[in-house]
Length: 168
Image 1 (tube, rainbow, N blue to C red):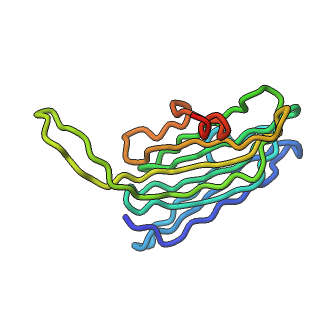
Image 2 (image 1 turned 60 degrees about the horizontal axis):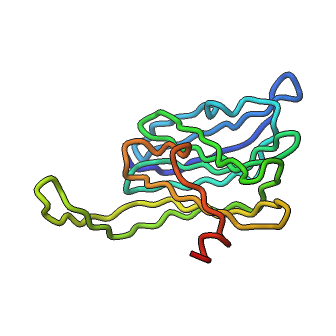
């Protein structure tokens, strides 16, 4: 199914201190889907909503910052086959603030060996997320999600500190 359009909005619910993220999409065949992103109804404010679609995998991608009283963190939502996966990218050093997150979907040629040790080449869809945290010193952080895998659960991915990653 090809996606024609998608929207996402944050809104406040009743009671007035409760927040959630609402999404809707329209496929080229006219099919409309919508709802509240699971796991987003909470007292934490959501900001910086970003939306992307990877046509290769058919996944709708959502990125936002969630404000918790003493810190904030980046969250990734992935919609695949009508099911949302919603995962946090937790701060490195406890009580920090996340800001200016960006996400990009790239398509890269990858090669691996199959069960018979024959090389297989394909194109992989990779979601890259980069953001800043104001730990004792401001640092950039990076995470990647391989969208071609059956589960794009961001809780299983590695998050890297850019200064440490660049020094190695």
